[in-house]
Length: 286
Picture 1: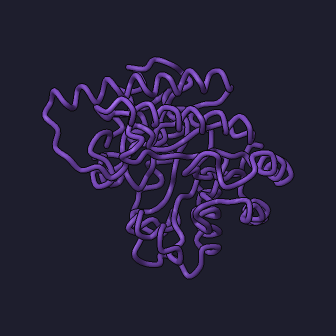
Picture 2: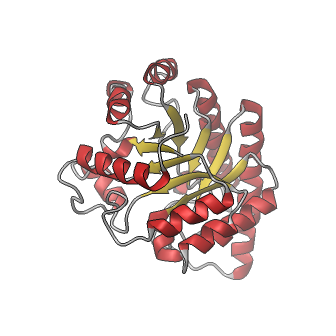
């Protein structure tokens, strides 16, 4: 298993001025890094990021999410087209920087909270499948994988369970497109996290790990033995990224409702989580 760290543990947004973070993440002992992209062109030089990733020996995944003006499930065709164009652009950017996986809750507008009639919801579903099928085709062309993240009920009104995600993967039917499963969201939505992982066998492309409070894995009440055993059963041996946030970044705090500090420092959170996950999964095979 390869262990990654999300750049948002330290910085947001990730820019050309924060490229030194890559060396820091490497020095802490991580194998990989997740980096969010909120706009195109990105606020960092693609060529420089590719070079620095190679120098640090880190695998990278680029992430993106959708807002109201880019919701691919929208009834507004212009909004849908804007969302698909953005996602396709980030997929291309993955190829430019050498990232192997495009991750994130790219299925619909994040934090949308509405009760749709069944007919409206079904139309949203069809538009989501159509939009993400286009993204999967671009991923195939670029040579990357797509990992659609399932969120909890407070952050999405559309896809909130692993079962939803598996249904989406089957509807699209492109092996380039799979799921990002996150222990924070699963702790809220799944009755048994291990069973949820097992139900997604063959569709898991990326994992986010953190505790019930977004703290370092191992510092809260999640059953990590259950997580480990389920991932072994389904044969997952990819990247498990520690995802948490920096409470000193007001814009990030407001967007994520991350109202309190969960570790003495961001480095300590990362180190503690890395030690725990190495002990849980064993050393990286690379």
